[in-house]
Image (tube, rainbow, N blue to C red):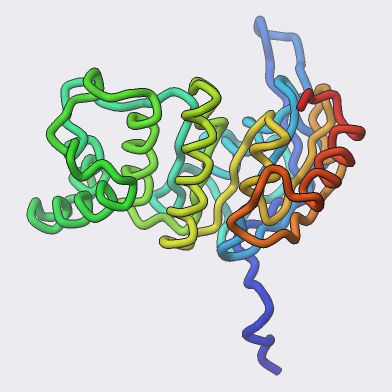
Length: 259
């Protein structure tokens, strides 16, 4: 019997993930313990927790940048053993090439994969338009604001046509107004170019504005999943929506995070 087409397809699977770092050659620091997580296709999942709770390590394991000590992590049923173009990663730092223009940065992944110049520039320009930077494609990073630099990073990640987007506190360096603008932009882009998204943040309001589902991490190492919240609220969302405010209070009571 075929599964219902209405049922979301499993995209990411983490089973019994554990990770310990070794510091100063011999000191063991348990970072995450007993992580079990399923992420559906096209789901916008937010991993929420304070600093030093293991959330970024979990993201890096899914990205293939770290290997778990034990456990299993898979994308579309295939084990993740390292980085790959099927996962686009956006970090808090802008990670742009200072000597390349916006266009040059966005097309870099395609160039490394051997995509012909005309095709890769067409793809890059599509995503530059998607993030609203079509008038800045010949600008260099030093000529851009922080929010614009992060939009270049998002465009570059999307240009490689990844199955999954992984964002690690991408707006942490931005001022409050720009951060809110980027949250709106992130939802707009996700709705236009649907992907599975895993977004790491320490900000409750940001999590509530973005997420289909929030995974709350415990506030200490080793990081464990403490609670899960489904954000069944219509989009576009209003920060003053009574349903959002109620869930905000519930999450705040369960964590050490400030609002």
